[in-house]
Image (cartoon, rainbow, N blue to C red; front, top):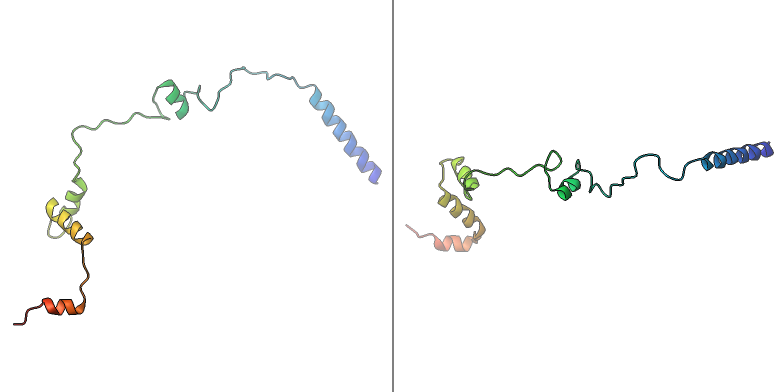
Length: 114
């Protein structure tokens, strides 16, 4: 039983070795090689090397006009109730940064009696 298994394994190994000896040493396709996609214009790296743009590497859109640096502050201020100007929004944000916690004694000392 063991001898048959060994014989079958040896026959399969010999068939495998003989099967691979007839393979050609050189590839049958074109011999052009592409290193990391540098020649392939469909990839991002290939487009950078070629200096082109397209689906894989779109051009940046040019903006018309000047960018407003206070746009987000202005929009946030409009959504508040009541609406705030940019200066008021900046004052609120800066007040949160410089906020100081008062103790109960300091709070009572700052209140004037009637």
